[in-house]
Length: 297
Image (cartoon, rainbow, N blue to C red; front, side, top):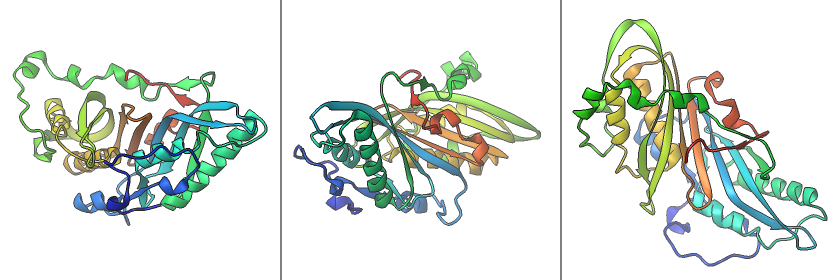
Protein backbone atom coordinates (compact mmCIF):
# COMPACT_ATOMS: atom_id res chain seq x y z
CA UNK A 1 0.00 0.00 0.00
CA UNK A 2 2.17 2.81 -1.34
CA UNK A 3 1.96 6.60 -1.11
CA UNK A 4 4.79 7.64 -3.45
CA UNK A 5 3.40 8.51 -6.90
CA UNK A 6 6.41 6.90 -8.56
CA UNK A 7 5.42 3.57 -7.03
CA UNK A 8 1.79 3.79 -8.13
CA UNK A 9 -0.08 2.32 -11.09
CA UNK A 10 -1.04 5.80 -12.29
CA UNK A 11 -0.53 6.38 -15.99
CA UNK A 12 0.87 2.88 -16.54
CA UNK A 13 -0.33 -0.25 -18.33
CA UNK A 14 -1.39 -2.78 -15.69
CA UNK A 15 -1.78 -6.57 -15.87
CA UNK A 16 -5.10 -8.23 -15.12
CA UNK A 17 -5.17 -9.38 -11.49
CA UNK A 18 -7.40 -12.38 -10.75
CA UNK A 19 -6.56 -12.86 -7.08
CA UNK A 20 -7.41 -10.61 -4.16
CA UNK A 21 -4.55 -8.20 -3.56
CA UNK A 22 -4.78 -5.33 -1.02
CA UNK A 23 -1.30 -4.14 -2.02
CA UNK A 24 -2.79 -2.71 -5.19
CA UNK A 25 -4.20 0.14 -3.11
CA UNK A 26 -2.47 3.51 -3.23
CA UNK A 27 -2.91 6.54 -0.98
CA UNK A 28 -2.14 10.22 -1.56
CA UNK A 29 -1.46 12.75 1.25
CA UNK A 30 -4.08 15.50 1.33
CA UNK A 31 -1.39 17.87 2.61
CA UNK A 32 0.22 18.14 -0.86
CA UNK A 33 -2.62 20.32 -2.15
CA UNK A 34 -3.73 21.83 1.14
CA UNK A 35 -0.34 23.39 1.85
CA UNK A 36 -0.32 25.00 -1.59
CA UNK A 37 -3.65 26.73 -0.88
CA UNK A 38 -2.96 27.52 2.78
CA UNK A 39 -5.47 25.03 4.13
CA UNK A 40 -4.24 23.92 7.54
CA UNK A 41 -4.82 20.23 8.26
CA UNK A 42 -4.49 21.07 11.95
CA UNK A 43 -7.33 23.59 11.78
CA UNK A 44 -9.52 22.74 8.80
CA UNK A 45 -12.00 25.47 7.80
CA UNK A 46 -14.61 22.83 6.97
CA UNK A 47 -16.20 19.52 7.84
CA UNK A 48 -17.06 17.03 5.16
CA UNK A 49 -16.53 13.72 3.47
CA UNK A 50 -15.64 12.06 0.20
CA UNK A 51 -18.42 9.86 -1.17
CA UNK A 52 -17.54 7.31 -3.85
CA UNK A 53 -19.83 5.15 -5.94
CA UNK A 54 -18.15 2.08 -7.40
CA UNK A 55 -20.30 0.42 -10.06
CA UNK A 56 -18.14 -2.59 -10.95
CA UNK A 57 -17.91 -4.60 -7.74
CA UNK A 58 -18.20 -8.34 -8.31
CA UNK A 59 -17.16 -11.50 -6.47
CA UNK A 60 -18.16 -15.17 -6.12
CA UNK A 61 -19.87 -17.37 -3.59
CA UNK A 62 -18.07 -20.59 -2.62
CA UNK A 63 -19.92 -22.47 -5.35
CA UNK A 64 -18.85 -19.92 -7.96
CA UNK A 65 -22.05 -17.88 -8.27
CA UNK A 66 -21.16 -14.31 -9.39
CA UNK A 67 -22.52 -11.42 -7.34
CA UNK A 68 -22.51 -7.91 -8.81
CA UNK A 69 -23.08 -4.85 -6.64
CA UNK A 70 -22.71 -1.09 -6.51
CA UNK A 71 -20.56 -0.02 -3.58
CA UNK A 72 -20.88 3.26 -1.72
CA UNK A 73 -17.69 4.31 0.05
CA UNK A 74 -17.56 7.20 2.52
CA UNK A 75 -14.70 8.62 4.55
CA UNK A 76 -14.02 11.86 6.37
CA UNK A 77 -12.27 14.90 4.95
CA UNK A 78 -10.22 14.77 8.16
CA UNK A 79 -8.27 11.76 6.92
CA UNK A 80 -4.56 12.35 6.33
CA UNK A 81 -4.73 10.47 3.04
CA UNK A 82 -7.18 10.05 0.18
CA UNK A 83 -7.58 6.90 -1.90
CA UNK A 84 -6.29 7.03 -5.47
CA UNK A 85 -9.13 5.98 -7.78
CA UNK A 86 -7.25 3.81 -10.28
CA UNK A 87 -5.69 1.79 -7.49
CA UNK A 88 -9.16 1.29 -6.00
CA UNK A 89 -10.47 0.08 -9.35
CA UNK A 90 -7.62 -2.44 -9.69
CA UNK A 91 -8.10 -3.53 -6.07
CA UNK A 92 -11.84 -4.09 -6.56
CA UNK A 93 -11.15 -6.03 -9.76
CA UNK A 94 -8.97 -8.41 -7.73
CA UNK A 95 -12.17 -9.63 -6.03
CA UNK A 96 -13.75 -10.78 -9.30
CA UNK A 97 -12.57 -14.41 -9.15
CA UNK A 98 -12.37 -14.72 -5.36
CA UNK A 99 -14.79 -17.06 -3.57
CA UNK A 100 -16.35 -16.07 -0.27
CA UNK A 101 -19.40 -17.29 1.68
CA UNK A 102 -21.87 -20.13 1.33
CA UNK A 103 -24.70 -17.70 0.52
CA UNK A 104 -25.08 -14.38 -1.25
CA UNK A 105 -25.72 -12.61 2.07
CA UNK A 106 -22.71 -14.19 3.77
CA UNK A 107 -20.48 -13.31 0.81
CA UNK A 108 -21.65 -9.69 0.89
CA UNK A 109 -20.87 -9.43 4.58
CA UNK A 110 -17.40 -10.91 4.13
CA UNK A 111 -16.53 -8.65 1.21
CA UNK A 112 -17.88 -5.55 2.95
CA UNK A 113 -15.81 -6.24 6.05
CA UNK A 114 -12.65 -6.97 4.09
CA UNK A 115 -12.89 -3.81 1.97
CA UNK A 116 -13.72 -1.71 5.03
CA UNK A 117 -10.66 -3.01 6.89
CA UNK A 118 -8.29 -2.65 3.94
CA UNK A 119 -9.31 0.93 3.16
CA UNK A 120 -9.40 1.99 6.82
CA UNK A 121 -5.88 0.63 7.27
CA UNK A 122 -4.78 2.39 4.09
CA UNK A 123 -5.84 5.92 4.98
CA UNK A 124 -5.72 5.65 8.78
CA UNK A 125 -9.36 6.67 9.15
CA UNK A 126 -12.55 4.66 9.56
CA UNK A 127 -14.23 3.98 6.23
CA UNK A 128 -17.93 3.25 5.75
CA UNK A 129 -18.95 0.71 3.11
CA UNK A 130 -22.39 -0.26 1.79
CA UNK A 131 -23.27 -2.64 -1.06
CA UNK A 132 -26.41 -2.17 -3.15
CA UNK A 133 -28.28 -4.11 -5.81
CA UNK A 134 -30.55 -2.73 -8.53
CA UNK A 135 -33.65 -3.39 -6.42
CA UNK A 136 -32.46 -1.21 -3.54
CA UNK A 137 -33.98 2.25 -3.13
CA UNK A 138 -32.14 5.12 -4.82
CA UNK A 139 -32.19 8.81 -3.90
CA UNK A 140 -31.13 11.95 -5.76
CA UNK A 141 -28.94 14.21 -3.64
CA UNK A 142 -29.36 17.94 -4.32
CA UNK A 143 -32.41 17.38 -6.52
CA UNK A 144 -33.89 20.69 -5.29
CA UNK A 145 -30.77 22.57 -6.45
CA UNK A 146 -31.57 21.91 -10.11
CA UNK A 147 -34.22 24.63 -9.93
CA UNK A 148 -31.41 27.13 -9.29
CA UNK A 149 -29.13 26.89 -12.31
CA UNK A 150 -26.41 29.51 -12.03
CA UNK A 151 -27.16 30.71 -15.57
CA UNK A 152 -30.68 31.78 -14.67
CA UNK A 153 -29.31 34.41 -12.29
CA UNK A 154 -27.38 36.13 -15.07
CA UNK A 155 -29.37 38.43 -17.38
CA UNK A 156 -29.36 37.07 -20.95
CA UNK A 157 -27.88 40.28 -22.38
CA UNK A 158 -25.06 40.23 -19.84
CA UNK A 159 -24.41 36.53 -20.49
CA UNK A 160 -24.26 37.15 -24.25
CA UNK A 161 -21.52 39.73 -23.74
CA UNK A 162 -19.58 37.81 -21.10
CA UNK A 163 -16.13 36.68 -22.18
CA UNK A 164 -14.36 33.56 -20.97
CA UNK A 165 -10.64 33.72 -21.58
CA UNK A 166 -9.18 32.50 -18.28
CA UNK A 167 -8.84 28.73 -18.04
CA UNK A 168 -6.57 28.44 -15.02
CA UNK A 169 -8.04 28.89 -11.54
CA UNK A 170 -8.12 32.57 -10.70
CA UNK A 171 -9.84 33.85 -7.53
CA UNK A 172 -9.48 37.44 -8.77
CA UNK A 173 -12.42 36.72 -11.05
CA UNK A 174 -14.80 36.68 -8.07
CA UNK A 175 -16.77 39.90 -7.63
CA UNK A 176 -19.27 41.04 -5.01
CA UNK A 177 -20.44 44.05 -3.04
CA UNK A 178 -20.47 44.07 0.77
CA UNK A 179 -23.88 45.08 2.16
CA UNK A 180 -25.60 45.28 5.54
CA UNK A 181 -28.09 42.55 4.67
CA UNK A 182 -27.50 38.83 5.13
CA UNK A 183 -28.53 36.90 2.04
CA UNK A 184 -28.77 33.19 1.34
CA UNK A 185 -27.64 31.85 -2.01
CA UNK A 186 -28.41 28.42 -3.42
CA UNK A 187 -27.25 27.44 -6.90
CA UNK A 188 -25.70 24.74 -9.03
CA UNK A 189 -23.68 24.69 -12.24
CA UNK A 190 -22.69 21.98 -14.72
CA UNK A 191 -19.78 23.91 -16.29
CA UNK A 192 -17.04 22.46 -14.08
CA UNK A 193 -14.27 20.73 -15.94
CA UNK A 194 -10.85 19.90 -14.55
CA UNK A 195 -8.20 17.31 -15.34
CA UNK A 196 -6.57 14.35 -13.65
CA UNK A 197 -3.10 15.50 -12.51
CA UNK A 198 -1.51 12.24 -13.68
CA UNK A 199 -3.38 11.00 -16.77
CA UNK A 200 -4.49 14.51 -17.80
CA UNK A 201 -7.89 13.09 -18.79
CA UNK A 202 -10.82 15.50 -18.28
CA UNK A 203 -13.13 15.25 -15.28
CA UNK A 204 -16.68 16.65 -15.47
CA UNK A 205 -18.70 17.71 -12.46
CA UNK A 206 -21.86 19.42 -11.24
CA UNK A 207 -21.17 21.96 -8.49
CA UNK A 208 -23.67 22.67 -5.70
CA UNK A 209 -23.31 25.70 -3.44
CA UNK A 210 -25.26 26.98 -0.45
CA UNK A 211 -23.99 30.18 1.15
CA UNK A 212 -25.14 32.80 3.65
CA UNK A 213 -23.26 36.10 3.44
CA UNK A 214 -23.55 39.89 3.55
CA UNK A 215 -21.97 40.06 0.11
CA UNK A 216 -24.19 40.71 -2.89
CA UNK A 217 -22.74 38.27 -5.38
CA UNK A 218 -22.11 38.94 -9.05
CA UNK A 219 -23.23 35.58 -10.45
CA UNK A 220 -21.42 36.15 -13.72
CA UNK A 221 -18.15 36.22 -11.77
CA UNK A 222 -19.01 32.85 -10.20
CA UNK A 223 -19.54 31.45 -13.68
CA UNK A 224 -16.24 32.85 -14.93
CA UNK A 225 -14.47 31.48 -11.87
CA UNK A 226 -15.82 27.95 -12.32
CA UNK A 227 -14.87 28.03 -16.00
CA UNK A 228 -11.33 28.97 -14.96
CA UNK A 229 -10.77 25.39 -13.71
CA UNK A 230 -10.91 24.09 -17.28
CA UNK A 231 -7.14 23.57 -17.58
CA UNK A 232 -6.47 22.87 -13.90
CA UNK A 233 -4.97 19.49 -12.99
CA UNK A 234 -6.18 18.38 -9.55
CA UNK A 235 -7.93 15.45 -7.93
CA UNK A 236 -11.67 15.86 -7.37
CA UNK A 237 -11.29 16.36 -3.64
CA UNK A 238 -8.76 19.13 -4.19
CA UNK A 239 -11.00 21.01 -6.61
CA UNK A 240 -13.83 21.20 -4.07
CA UNK A 241 -11.49 22.36 -1.32
CA UNK A 242 -10.02 25.08 -3.56
CA UNK A 243 -13.50 26.39 -4.44
CA UNK A 244 -14.53 26.29 -0.79
CA UNK A 245 -11.40 28.16 0.33
CA UNK A 246 -11.76 30.85 -2.34
CA UNK A 247 -15.45 31.43 -1.52
CA UNK A 248 -14.61 31.53 2.19
CA UNK A 249 -11.92 34.15 1.66
CA UNK A 250 -13.79 36.37 -0.78
CA UNK A 251 -17.42 36.23 0.37
CA UNK A 252 -16.74 35.79 4.11
CA UNK A 253 -19.87 33.67 4.53
CA UNK A 254 -21.59 32.89 7.82
CA UNK A 255 -22.43 29.49 6.36
CA UNK A 256 -21.01 27.69 3.34
CA UNK A 257 -21.42 24.35 1.62
CA UNK A 258 -19.70 23.25 -1.59
CA UNK A 259 -20.12 19.86 -3.23
CA UNK A 260 -19.15 18.52 -6.64
CA UNK A 261 -20.71 15.37 -8.05
CA UNK A 262 -18.37 14.11 -10.73
CA UNK A 263 -19.26 11.91 -13.67
CA UNK A 264 -18.25 8.28 -13.65
CA UNK A 265 -14.83 7.38 -15.00
CA UNK A 266 -13.40 3.86 -14.89
CA UNK A 267 -16.55 2.60 -13.17
CA UNK A 268 -16.18 5.05 -10.25
CA UNK A 269 -17.54 8.49 -9.46
CA UNK A 270 -16.27 10.68 -6.60
CA UNK A 271 -18.39 13.27 -4.83
CA UNK A 272 -16.55 15.44 -2.28
CA UNK A 273 -18.57 17.71 0.01
CA UNK A 274 -17.25 20.42 2.33
CA UNK A 275 -19.25 22.64 4.68
CA UNK A 276 -18.82 25.11 7.51
CA UNK A 277 -21.00 22.97 9.78
CA UNK A 278 -22.41 19.45 9.87
CA UNK A 279 -26.01 20.63 9.47
CA UNK A 280 -25.20 21.71 5.90
CA UNK A 281 -23.99 18.26 4.79
CA UNK A 282 -26.40 16.48 2.45
CA UNK A 283 -28.00 13.54 4.28
CA UNK A 284 -28.93 11.61 1.13
CA UNK A 285 -25.38 11.81 -0.18
CA UNK A 286 -23.93 10.50 3.09
CA UNK A 287 -26.58 7.86 3.81
CA UNK A 288 -25.65 4.18 3.67
CA UNK A 289 -29.34 3.25 3.49
CA UNK A 290 -29.76 4.31 -0.14
CA UNK A 291 -27.80 4.10 -3.33
CA UNK A 292 -27.34 7.29 -5.31
CA UNK A 293 -29.35 7.93 -8.44
CA UNK A 294 -27.70 10.39 -10.76
CA UNK A 295 -29.76 13.44 -11.62
CA UNK A 296 -28.32 13.95 -15.07
CA UNK A 297 -24.92 12.46 -15.81
